[in-house]
Image (cartoon, rainbow, N blue to C red):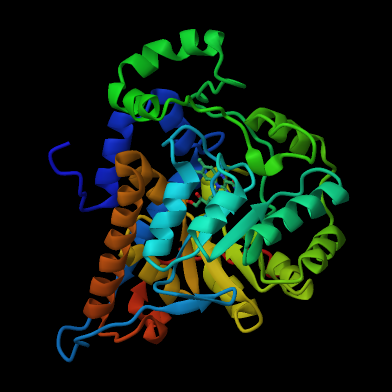
Length: 391
Ligand SMILES: Cc1cc2nc3c(=O)[nH]c(=O)nc-3n(C[C@H](O)[C@H](O)[C@H](O)COP(=O)(O)O)c2cc1C
């Protein structure tokens, strides 16, 4: 590629689309049902504007903060994504990029790399779990992550096992065997650089979830792990409080939309929550998190660290979320596009693009620090906000 550096996340996404086999790209686009929530996650940020100043601006600006006990260089975290086959170095490349830019790595329990390898690459790794398996299994996975050096636990609760998409779901094989290779050949053969990146390593994607491995067993396939999760009875709030106690350290609940749920999260003693609809991959019709954020931040922001994820593609999106009450944001697809476009350097590129965008937004708003942002810095159309679960 002539110039591998890209200037926006949109350009990284264009390159990812050109580079990845159709099924892998489709798995990252994700979304569910009609795609209402995934579309709203992006559209909602476009509907928000800024109220800028033009003189007396700050010559230098700061954006460092802390989340779940970790000092971080900017208010952005890597949100956990359980994806396979984007890049041979997968989550280890993402973790290194995040380490180099001074931000935490959220590692999915469905990820393609082990928590040991990832925590060795990033000393601010937060391990993410679903309520999956029996209590002994949950404790075993959690203790493995702790022993590997994970500094916090993220528990994601907003998954509804919806698996239909109006535009069709990509076919993902259980494992890469001869049958799968034949079926995938037509889409892979037209993506020679992706094929070459994997071929150079001498390994094909094995599509397993190493962090879901049970003692004495082989790592399950992605679908094997998903099946275990589907079979697990859904958790109660008491179950989550039990999990929180077992972990003891910094604890985030991811997937909150409603104020009443946010209060339950405070009651169980969580350190942080993320206002999130799982990138719109879940219960379709759930409003974009940015619409629900201010009500949650008003209700519990003094008791728990409030984060947001969903739809962040620019530094200005980060600034909008902070102005509306978030302490920091988490990103998903943005870094996945970077990883596909240019491996670890591509993820660093995305983080630099976001940092530059945060800085220029702060400058335009006349702020010397992200901590000076207030709601008056953002203009929203009437009816924009959706306070959920307030009665
Ligand atoms: C392909 C894909 C896989 C994901 N896998 C997980 C996961 O394993 N665990 C989790 O907590 N969230 C998962 N998420 C949700 C992200 O952590 C995050 O909430 C979402 O991507 C944020 O929206 P954004 O992609 O617009 O930034 C996934 C998202 C995508 C796009």
